[in-house]
Image (cartoon, rainbow, N blue to C red; front, side, top):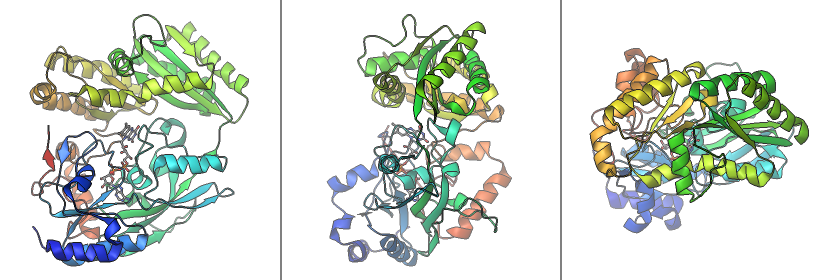
Length: 486
Ligand SMILES: Cc1cc2nc3c(=O)[nH]c(=O)nc-3n(C[C@H](O)[C@H](O)[C@H](O)COP(=O)(O)OP(=O)(O)OC[C@H]3O[C@@H](n4cnc5c(N)ncnc54)[C@H](O)[C@@H]3O)c2cc1C
């Protein structure tokens, strides 16, 4: 329901953030109301771009007083439509891109304190310049922001070693839905004085407040990095290879990424590469990376031992060990471009599921069989961070079938098959991308009533007016989706 007058709202916003901090023209607003995948389009009277925490607080105070809904937005790279407003035009967007200051790097405490609008790449670069590593590694690093990473509890390719955003965060500053500011920007590793409130806001997808700053953990910069691309007989063998690699390489394993045969051919096509790194039929492949603070030769030998042992156990059919940084970057580019290859190919059903690591092989085999019963010609684009049980299970239309036709005919059935199977294996329907709007109504099916009641209680306690990112994450029938473009 519109409870504000547009002209009064705009005047108030301009007063707080200045004219340069308000976007109102259609062409200016467009990139902020359409999601990354081009699936959802919403409306907003204004995109507000504050520069300070105090400006965010003033904007939210105004919105609270006048019943204006708010969509917090970072880099707008959400995979689930979480960062764009709905079609009603009743919500303003608060985009944090101009809040991109690095406050402090404390080398002795191994922490970095940043404004939430810093891009992930900017934070990684700042850490590197100080000889430290900020270890979150995701393909959207150049665009996504720390506030978005926190709000989605982002994961990526180094979770195996360093954990996800929950594990990497020590302190937060948050503007609450009524405009008060909760500041706990401390780099403290131990504090047992009650509820760990920061964890409420991490992974909350902007439904409980706006994160304006954070204290993040840094790690020592590795001095050696060994990478191999390995062909395995099937996903089950990959998981046995992981177990064997853990025994030999222990904490050195940094990434363990699966690539299915169809995912490999799609990305090679996308990158216009004539030759695959490994010769012969693509097969199932694993990109494995070890890092350490020791010598390069020593680490290469550990990786060689991993591969030799796996070969003796018939877990490996072929392998290539990168012998230069250029080769390492090339192998990683192939892995990281799969997501964009799919976006460009159009017509894939994206299921970001997780299962216990020991069930990854069973999941892929059974889910693939179910999908091929539903859509026999689907291309089985499957990849992801299987080292932590996360599978991007994304069946793609056959080249000859129109994307819209494929999605409307098979999309729901494929999603139900994959998500239902993951949950039956004690897994999750969203491992790292969040719920947004794309997955919100599925929660009703897969979460217990008690769990949903608890989530709603938290939401009501912090945001009784449902002003923060309405219609996202929590299943409610009353709030319209952003208009679905396709
Ligand atoms: C090519 C590509 C690769 C990707 N790879 C990965 C991957 O490996 N792992 C992974 O986890 N994700 C991945 N993603 C998804 C996405 O990049 C992450 O979810 C990222 O953390 C979102 O950050 P963002 O700044 O773009 O947030 P947005 O998309 O702007 O917002 C995401 C959610 O967070 C909320 N939000 C944003 N900023 C704030 C804030 N300051 N305070 C409160 N709420 C806020 C929004 O309301 C929304 O609900 C990938 C995306 C792309 C396009």
